[in-house]
Length: 399
Ligand SMILES: *Cc1c(COP(=O)(O)O)cnc(C)c1O
Image 1 (tube, rainbow, N blue to C red):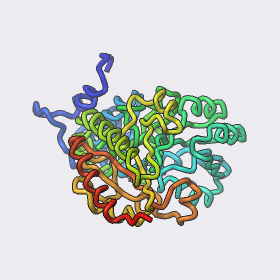
Image 2: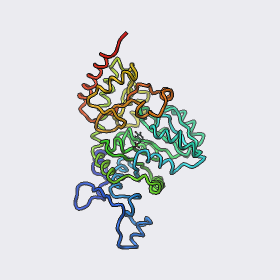
Image 3: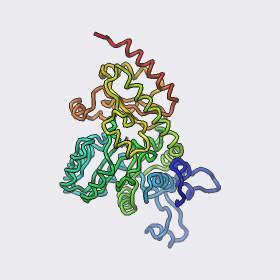
Image 4: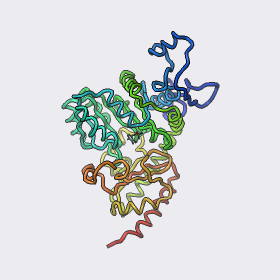
């Protein structure tokens, strides 16, 4: 696509043309596992990659390809490949490039599953993992200087929405000879394009904001063709392929990505500002607040601050147990990025595998609650919080 169009238009139109058939305006779900060839030479040429086409569903599928093309265009990438889940995108990307004796540098606050790969699975393969305090740029730079195969970043992080300077770290990472990978799930391609900031690969749990309706799992990684090809090869052999039905749901969800993100961040900011005014609230974390530690970096590298925030209550978990059930327009669930506003305590969702001591060491208070703002009308979400806080006040014994 040479024409210069904006990201919202791209989300609606891009990546679909090639797969449309019979004059249909919508992408078909092609469920066929294999493809028929009368011409033995053509079959051979497609099989060996000399000619474009499809052979077998574990490798490629037209509906899945339309999904990959849309994300690729939104991230401004040359190529993309997709996966059955976000974790498959992350693990396949890491395992494609890492071998025994290698070294990976990352941060302590990555997504829980990613953190488990770093602490449980990579060390078993004799891969050294250096995890730095999130937001401590000097510590990351020091680790990079010791040698590094992959620099793995995630920003904003889950659930305390900490920010890392992608441009600064990507530059240092490349100087160290590392492949720079960024998990862009929280920011979405609407708000942040890590490849433009110097990263080599950007990946997403498409399950979250890209799909947006909490009804399909998927993952995707984008970057230069020479990096995506080996990842695609690893995936086609290891088998974590995205299902065509899921690809269709994700693709349809993505058409409204921009509209959703705009409303979600409007709601997130309103909720953050409301919470800041509550005397029963201890702390509020949102990159869009001037009080956020790295608000300046967020402002520099993000076009908007996204729909994710978190807060803690002075009454800890006891107070959370009163406040959360009182909310009428919220799911109390483990997912995020959906059209419905979703609340979840970190100790039950993102950091369920950690002990209270480990959570404390990561700067996660026991009563921390993650909010994924939905697309509801802002005043209704605030009204909902008002009635829930009134109930909490009634139940809070003051001494
Ligand atoms: C959910 C999530 C993942 C994992 O994605 P799945 O689709 O659940 O496998 C990875 N990174 C981040 C930031 C996430 O929120």
